[in-house]
Length: 170
Image (cartoon, rainbow, N blue to C red; front, side, top):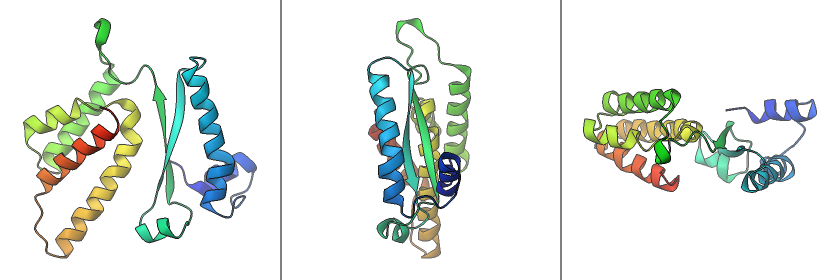
C-alpha cells in the first residue's frame, strides 16, 4: 500500500505532480502496468503489478479525489499455491492461509469448516486487495451495528469472501 502523494514524489520528485487521480492513473500507472503485463504474457518476466485505489468513503470516489492509498499486488507465477505436478505449498502461503482462517473464525465467527475451506483458496497475490476488502467490510458491519440493524456477521463475511475469491478465480 502506498499513498498517492508518496508515489508521485518517488516517481517525479514532488508530491503534487498530478492534480487529479485520473491524471496519475492515465499518465503513469495504466501505461506501466499494461507494459509489464505484456512482458509477463510473453514470459519475459515472472511478475507484474496490478493496482486498486482505496477510498475511505464512496463520496470521494465519485468526485474523483485522490484515493486514500493505492494497493499494489504483484501477480507471480510461483505464489498461487498451485500444487499440480507434485509442487508443495510454500511456507509463506501456509502462514497467510492460517492467519486468514484464524481471523475468520475468531474475529468474524465464521464456522470453522467454512473458514478452512475459504482460507485454502487464498493465494499470496491476493493479500493487499483482501486487506482493503476487509476494511470495507468492517466499515459496513460497524455502520449496521450503529444503525441497530441485525446482521449475521459470520454468514455475511463467508458469503462475501466467497464472492471475492470467485472474482479472483480462486
